[in-house]
Amino acid sequence: MPDKSGNAYALTILSPIKDGHLDEVAYADIVRRRLDNWNLLENSPMARVPQTYLCRYFVLNDVFTQSLAGTDVYGTWFDFLSIFSDRARRRALPREDHLKSKYLVFSCNFHGDLDAYLRGMWLAIGNEIRHAWEFCYAFDQVRSDDDFVTYMKKCQLTASLFFVGSTDDPLEEQLKSLYLKQEFGKFVIEHQGLAAVELQQAWREFVARVEPANVKGPSWSPGQYRLRQETI
Amino acid sequence: MSNIAGKAYAMSVITPIRWYMTWINKLFFWVAQKRKSTLKGLITLSLIHYARWVIIGRKQFPHLHPDQPKEDLHYSYMLFFSNFNGSWDQYVDSFTFSIPSGLDLFWKWNVRYPRSVPLTPFHEYIRYNQIETTHYYSAYPLASANDIKAAKKVRQALLDFDDRCSDVSPEEFMKQYKGLLRNLQNDLGDMRPTPIVSMSAQQVEKRRRRDVRKEKERLAVLQEERKHA
Image 1 (cartoon, rainbow over the protein chains, first blue to last red):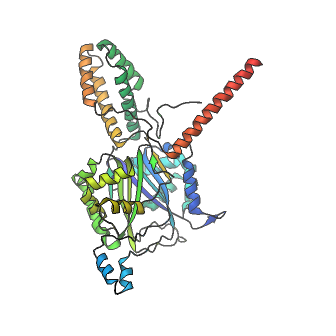
Image 2: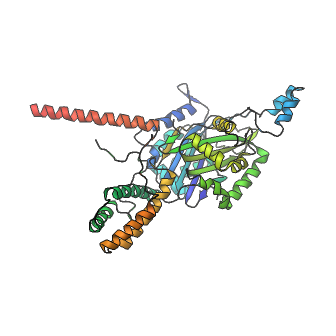
Image 3: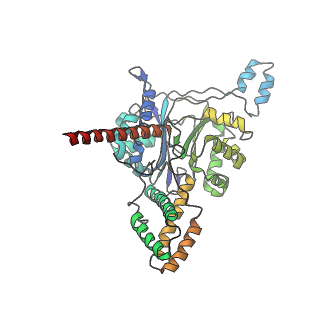
């Protein structure tokens, strides 16, 4: 299954957006603005979706047509022929494509099974999903987590190749490991030059504080971008 | 709008491919997926978290409703999504220098692909076909892919060390501890929110600091008023 590599999953969603306007603003632009507003929040709503490693959203307005010179094997031939015929010159250029719909693109890497992930996503941020997908074709039929799973599978594209350069461990384990790496680095620096007895005692206190085996215990939170969480 | 989430950069590229040649690309990808040794070059680029290639047939764009117009395209399209660490130039250049032939093999049938060498036309090609991300999220913006792999090693080493050495004599503990540090010396780099988490996160952080300052000022005024009351 090319969408999966070990326990990591590559989800690619293209949801067609309706062609319409609200208060003179195109639906696609409203979708883009709503997603953009997520950037102004304290943290992304996706931080609440279990097992999300990395994900992105954007609106695909159209496909690109690049008419700069390339290494097309017939390109030079057509260029040469264009001295005699403008038709030949035009044939050397790529044909121009345009999409008839704009698409909301959601690309995500997560740990585990697709159905469970999508259900967790709906349960965690159902309101945000409804808000972002509101103007997509057929989304008005989505009323429950089951509907959401069915809908997303209709919008899903299969990856041809998925490469995992990191790990495919559960997110809690990854975050716990990062927390430990950071804390142990500090421990090493702060306890240089201690006598064996003191060092052993300090180690016991360190282990009691950081609880290396407990992934639910002290750890980093998903999406955390500060080293210390300050409170007002 | 941001292609950056802490240490991660989101690259999204969409390129046209002649529909009658997609099967060759799919075959290459299938072989690469089945025989991981073919991705050795990609593995050496340890700056990648996750990357994927998706080929959309010209008639395979999702069609969900009778009111939705059907796409009528000349080409199929290849989507490339990558999550990597470092700058755009570092990434594109490291691809070119490490796996130029692999890169050419994957993009060879894409319309107007200029080849990965020389660099400037390749840069132009990627830039032209790249799409900006509107919202990008990373569960660990402070960490690079190498941090995550190193952290896994550190955690396992600490668990093993604690099992083995928590009750040994102090002298033996010290000996084993030094061994642990030798073993982990390349995996203990500090992680920090530098150089920037993202432009928007910086704005959020600025706003948060301002709110904290205002709240402190408000509390100080309240305390002052209570003192005088």
